[in-house]
Length: 149
Image (cartoon, rainbow, N blue to C red; front, side, top):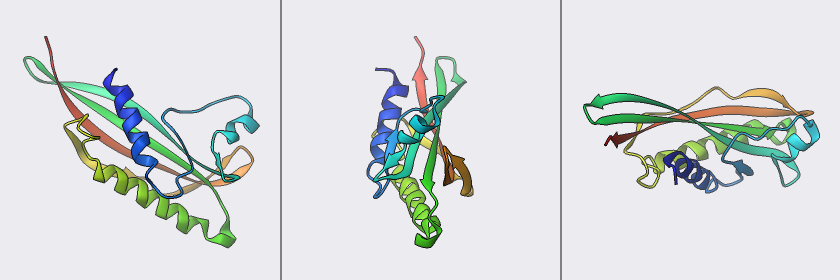
């Protein structure tokens, strides 16, 4: 199995440990139909979902080794409910996601290390289908040394 596939599955597993996380997809979901799109992220009748996307880059580290970097971006969406202070509960989910990733900094020994920590953008609002939602991007960069033949 390609390492990117294993990383994707491990990050999803880590996210599923977070209380109240909702739907978690280990890839970016998409459709042209807004109604169908929103159903990808509904949990307990509310928009509450997360996606995992991965970018890659490599750099020569020596004659027979390459450092491969996996840039994991996690996007979270949760419907706004001001009366229920949903911004606070969304912040708690963000904290839970970051804690889950920090606690598994080597992704169950799939990678050598987490490079430079985990970053979360400032939460913002986005229209998601027809729902006003909280939105966040959390990113982490992992390093794995590949020995070349």
